[in-house]
Length: 193
Image 1 (cartoon, rainbow, N blue to C red):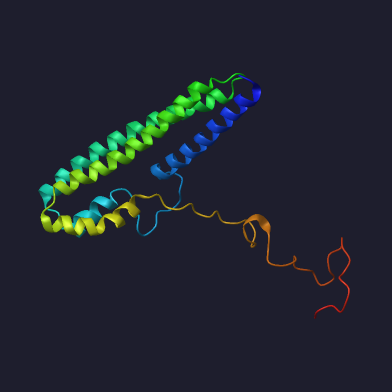
Image 2 (cartoon, rainbow, N blue to C red):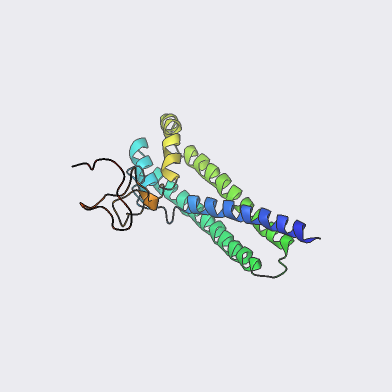
């Protein structure tokens, strides 16, 4: 395998790694800033559904058991992906990385993400089976809101050290002192008062 093919394969693997890392961040919800009104925090979806669907105590207990099972499986898949990502990053330091192993790791991480999505769909299907006909109709109407609640909050903007916009650029030239900046001449024409 010549050098350009190795570099091309490595570039492809790095793109896959970045994509998977973003998916992991989005699905874990960690590091994404303050939750919004729609995402008040852990347990919000359960309580939202309990209230909106008027779940009985028995239904809520059964749903809580489903949640526990779903979270355990998701946690296992997330931990596997973190371990695989660490192995993938370690291979970057090698002089001759095993590109086949890198591709295998990234594919497994992608399969785990697909499995998490499938598990979530199955989880809500199981939950729906706990509901009465009227609750099912209401749940179907709420499903889009529930999916939005599951999405991580958008990243927060970090407060700026100065009063300017991010990146330090402003809409105009920097403010001038009364005498003008010492390191540059005043512009031609009359000075504004």
